[in-house]
Amino acid sequence: MDPATVAQGPLPPARVPTTSPLVTPHAARPPGPIPSAPVTGVTANAPEPNILAHRTQLIDEAVERARRYLLNEAERVQVAGGSAEVEVTVGNPAEEIVGSAERLGVDGIAMATRRESSLARGVLGSVTDRVIHTTNLPLLALHPEDISAFSGNSGAPGTLIVPLDGSALSEKAVPVAMEIAQAVGARILFLRSSATPYYGSSEAGVDYMPTNYGVTEIRQDALMYLEPFVKSARDSGLAADSRSVIGNAVGAIIDSAEENEGSLIVMSTHGRSGFKRFFLGSVADKVVRSAGTPVLVLPPRDE
Image 1 (cartoon, rainbow, N blue to C red):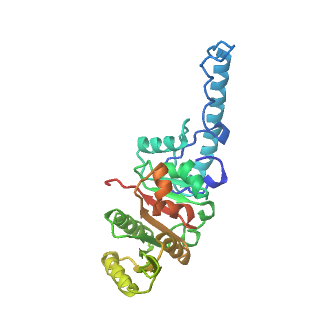
Image 2 (cartoon, helix red, strand yellow):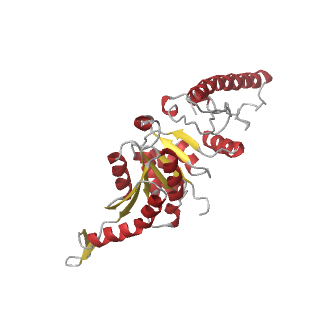
Image 3 (tube, rainbow, N blue to C red):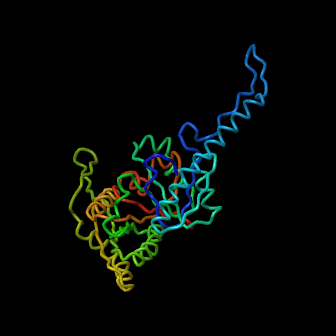
């Protein structure tokens, strides 16, 4: 957690690691080392003792400021009826968050994330992106405007949207969503998005155009695929429905979330990273980046 407004939203009662490398962006890491390679006309010397002492003092002061900030946030959690622990670490933010989460044995991570351009996120990445693709824990991602998304339902989601694409990986989100729904009394919406059908024409070379041919059959097949999940949820005493959409998967997920106020998207990710994620992307990445509702991202533990 950093002191920016964007990071101050997710404060669930669950035991989530709250880490902060340092308070301000320019102090996120200890000052860099003095170059040791010789420079023409200058003799390279080791840092003077007073310089090293000054660095240590700056780090200690920043750590103490971070600790006071986090103690204030922990008090907010405790006032809301939860429990909280505070830990301050120094280093790469994403690595420290993931490492602390594993060492403390927590159940999940909650983070706020900023909306950025696809280029910035693909090449540079954000802390949230890096954590998503390196942790083995579920991660709850929220945008600043999502913070009060559940305020109308006693702080809990009213609808869980579970996108399924027919893969075993996507279906791993089902039991998690059902467990959450049972705990908070939420409805589950199982969603399947199918690609728009195209037909080819070779009158003037090969050309492909969208068509409505076969759309009815595609929708029926999708609903048949979703039916066992709906039945399983209803047999467990949950309210559940299914929806079949023709078109872009990301758009279908976001539209469904907008139509169901106070919803939570629960989905799995393939765990791609770096340039592969930038060029190929994943549905989970794009949903986290663009959705106006909180997203619970589940890691590919057994992939």
